[in-house]
Length: 314
Image (cartoon, rainbow, N blue to C red; front, side, top):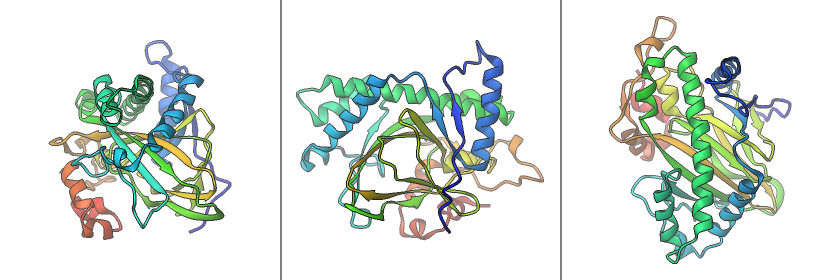
């Protein structure tokens, strides 16, 4: 399939969206969110809560982090797949990333910081925590809107309490060529919701339902909000979980970060009965996200066209 240069992701402004003070604005935004996630599985969002100073500080922090010696970065370990340091992969030699569990929680951000800077690094810690906390508010707002738009308000408390957060910070080296090179393989996210932010080096591409690739070129102050397979399954396919990839060219490094809301271990993802009917038969059997991830990283899971359908499709 080709690349559809004329297509753009929907743009949604969250600057003045508050159900308590602007009910009409909330409802209009909610409608746009639902339409975007149904058709594209993602959209570009503007958020007023993050200052230009914090924007600058977050990318300064990412550069500082990835400039650390490899042996220091390898201290970012986790038993969970893709929660610790990832790098040195022959298939994606431009890609390097690290993970910070529960980054919106100050104590967790401090714990991560002390692993890499035993003497402390208060500015890095504060920047990571504050930025993550702001993105977590957007995550919660979007998920609330989705549940309201599907008439699933009675599941709100359960759903919002079913996830933890992972902040994944990423660096893609410039390939030093103008010919596009693969930065990260095409994939769907496996979690609930993802919020991505980047420096001004583009590379993210999103596949449409028709198979074309949109080259995403967000503004410096915007974020990409994207549905993952777990939310796709929980809504019984009412939302779209899009394939996306990173293609790199040029000499400049691309720094990005993603806040992932991830189902907690032991929480069973099961579509509510309200989203299952004759027009929308049940797509997936109930599953535990951690068990699904373990399958995804097996040879069979990596080979499958859709790991989710192979693992628990009806």
